[in-house]
Image (tube, rainbow, N blue to C red):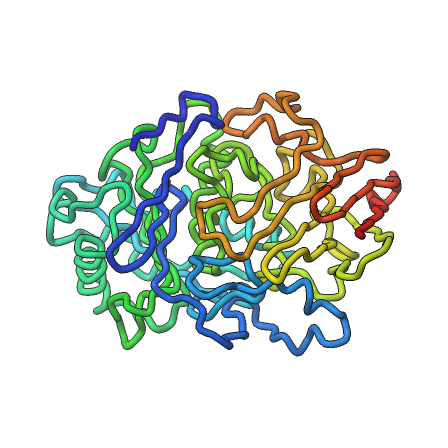
Length: 431
């Protein structure tokens, strides 16, 4: 299915296709995982910290469980097999071209489309907890032995057989000069003239948690992102934000799902890079920051008990302070509450306030595991920036406004804002 960024972003369709080896959600922002959490597999592969650190914080009810068989579940902690998301992470970056698609300019110019911006984006989003090191041991184009057309790579392609052959050819070409075992993830930056324009169909994809991937230096290339054509729609935003396809793809190697659905960004909008990575810069949801180990457990407020509880949350863009309140409804779902303001990676915020969203650990990637509550439905939003889902841009709740889920007996009210600190006081009432 083709997509065109010449239309409003809300009309972009980002479908999910099934691959032979693993579920493959392709839309330029895609992932495939062949490793699913096993029963009793409690340790997360993302953050370095373990669950023991949470003892004494009463967070267990808020760690909604990842059910068996769910692809890239929103459950906490992240399942095993993915790249850790705290500390120093080394990425191997290989620039690849083909005889029928020779390198478009210098290979390091292609690399510069994504770095150092990607490193800075992760440093800012993680509050310095993820030190992303991008390395290029082979600074020239890596020519593949077969033309691009021979691999049969299209939108929705599974890991078999084309991608498996491509990975094997990349390993064969690079292995004499590259120690693959020294890296935590691999980025294959394909020459942009291989395949169709991203305005027609987006090929970029990530295969994550895939223990059955081809091996190099005794290590399976289990977490590998492929980036193809430039995501430039002519709106003028590409120069500053075109790199964002890579932190989105790398979000998958850390175990995060796609938040867009077949209808586009209508479920989460521009509030997380795993939803929309075209256009203006934006950050990740607080739930993902906790899942990745970028928020400490004492920055989470778990409202599991019935009754009334008041909490104060500081803006997500600022380091320190309580950042996320969570109200578990079932062992696999609940509501998250956080404060979003313009700052850090959140340059596109046009309506600061309290963001409320529903999280489900039992929903596959690309099927809508998170849904943002819109405080002002059918308003048309507060932004006209290109490639930002306008309707949800004014989703945050402001002082005096409330979100209510009558079915669960939950009411979340924004009581006040401290204009000096930017913190919001929130009341959570549940029957």
